[in-house]
Every structure is written in C-alpha cells, then in structure tokens.
Length: 271
Image (cartoon, rainbow, N blue to C red; front, side, top):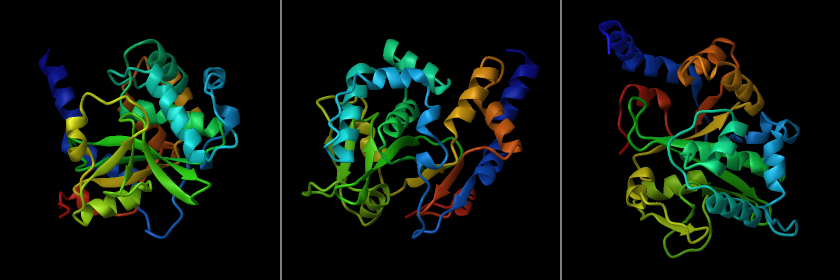
C-alpha cells in the first residue's frame, strides 16, 4: 500500500470524523415521547418486488397477534439464511444475497425483517446499541415490534434468534424495558424463537449489558437509500454515500431515549 493511500485511509479513520458524523445524525429523545416507527418513513407500496414474492412463502395466520406473526417471519428468515459477512447493498440485493449465499450480519437481518413486517402491517422499529461511538466492539442492530394483543412494544433480535424477558418471567420486554432492567443489576434472560442458536452466543452478555446505550433509527427511507446504493454503491464506500445524504438533509438519525449522546461523544462512561 502506497504512502498516499495509507495517509488517506488513516485520515478517514480519524476519531474526529466519527465525532462529527455522530454529532450530525444523533439527537437526545425525551423518554416519554413517541419514538419513530419504520412506517413513518416507508410505505409498503415501495417495498421491492422480491420481498413480495418471498413473503408468499411465509405461512402467516391473520388471526394471530402481531407478535406471533413477527416470530413466524423471524423463524422463516432463520431457516433460510445462514449469515456471514456484512453486505452493504440495497435491500433487494441484500435479500437475494442472504437467501442464496452465506452472507448477512445483524443490520442486514434487521433490514429485511423490517421490510417483511411492513408488508404484513406489523408495526416495527429499527434499533441499535453501542458502548462507544469510536471503534465500538459490541455494537449491534435489532428490531422492536408492536403487539396488538399485549398493547406494548416487544424487542426482537432476529440475527440472534431471541426475544427478552425478566428472569423467571415469560412476558417479553421492550427495548427500553430490557436496558432499564439490566441497569438495575438484573441478569439477562431470553427466549429463542426456534431451535437455531448462534455460534457467538457466548458474546450475548457483552452485546446486551448495562454499559450499552440503545438508540432508535429514525427517518430511514428505504427506497431513497436503495436508489443511492444502486447508483453509487459500486463507486463509493458507504460512508461517502451517507455523507451525500447528510449534505442533502435526507439522512437517517439516531434517537437516544435513555442516554445523553453528547456525553458519549466526550467519552463519559455509563455506570
């Protein structure tokens, strides 16, 4: 690798760029406010046709609660997808690659799950959690669906094949309920949707701990991002494409309902 290329690579990884990016895309959400949903920025009519075609293979009972239907979608994905390297393509290209190759990480699972939920009129949110902005080790992506029967939001980690409860309880938790429960010093408890168990389950206590800060993804317009990824994905890395959307004011944002992201930018630790 040449000196110029090494310098450019080092510059792009400089922590200042991470701080600037997160300062532009993050906000502190009020705990009591209604957090954004995936359908706020997306319409089922804009979902790529490949999702519609594959959705016909999922045996969903319209009489079941949205939580049970969401679990059936998660089981279907876990049966068909083995996972592997991250993809970083448009949603339709991601779906095709996940279903035909050993590919896909947590964010890819969340992406296709959210779109299947949108097709089936299941209210869904996209979430992430992170312990630090610069070079996070345990950052993760997952989803949350609304159960009509239970009148509450329920966290679902499709990549890990899990939903979460309190120890000794069977009632599923929302994202904020889970992290509040962990911050109170309680043990992590979870239930698998199916028989599948991830090879890296030994990391689960680090991925979900009181040190992680959850954030909900808002203003993610799947159709818009698909168009940028299809047009520029072969020429520019993802951070450049994100920068284009930030400059246009059409980027997604991270809303932190439990933590002050500004303190995180300064490196203050949660205790």
